[in-house]
Length: 285
Ligand SMILES: Nc1nc2c(ncn2[C@@H]2O[C@H](COP(=O)(O)OP(=O)(O)OP(=O)(O)O)[C@@H](O)[C@H]2O)c(=O)[nH]1
Ligand SMILES: [Mg+2]
Image (tube, rainbow, N blue to C red):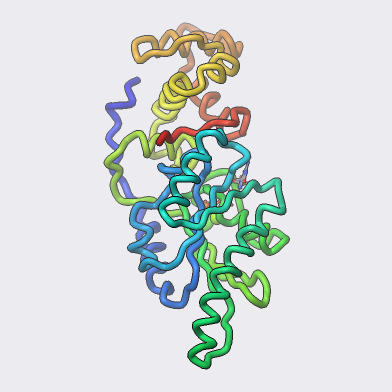
């Protein structure tokens, strides 16, 4: 049980296909809506997004804002704004949040259409594309903007399988896309952060590896959450077995001979996936 032994090097072919498909339609797009998970504002950004989208104007949407540690995530919001980005936060339980996206799109389109007018062209409809890592909440955002469930959503990566164009209103179309990642992770923490927030398929990394990363990160930044949810006062790499043993006892998981590492790991991973643990942000500036 040592997460450092894991060498993450993989790339599902359908993601390369999605990137090619995005590149092939990008010339017709006005605005890129980049959806990130507010709990991992660095790890959930797509490094080569500017290249894939040919430097199109983008809006960064900090989604799942209800689940993050606002103190920490707000620092990232300020950073990205200072870098010149348009930033919006969204929480699927708050319908009003989505109006902020519409309003930013409208602001951008005023400029686009003013330029068109000066050339004697008629105003055009906003053509937007929603891009992000798997499970960031892209399809949910589009459903909220339409006001009904037109796209399938689910709490696992890889729900959307193809590009879909959705009409929001007479001024705006949105293209939904499957979640994308990148061919190689140079930074293992980043991959583990993505896995902790259900952005990477469970088959790719072992459940124990993800669970250990969650325990480690909670102990570093949220020792109160670690103690309250798992009964762990102190965590270190030297006492992983002890920790699993303590969690088994704290959660009344029967120990038959030895600790059921898989079951305990699943419980840890599910505590984030099922939103029992909230108010966490794993990326630090
Ligand atoms: N708590 C919370 N959950 C959200 C929010 N937005 C989306 N979700 C949940 O996140 C999960 C993933 O949502 P999807 O919209 O399917 O995500 P996606 O980015 O389209 O995922 P893929 O198509 O697999 O890439 C679902 O269980 C949603 O209900 C949010 O703002 N807050
Ligand atoms: Mg989707």
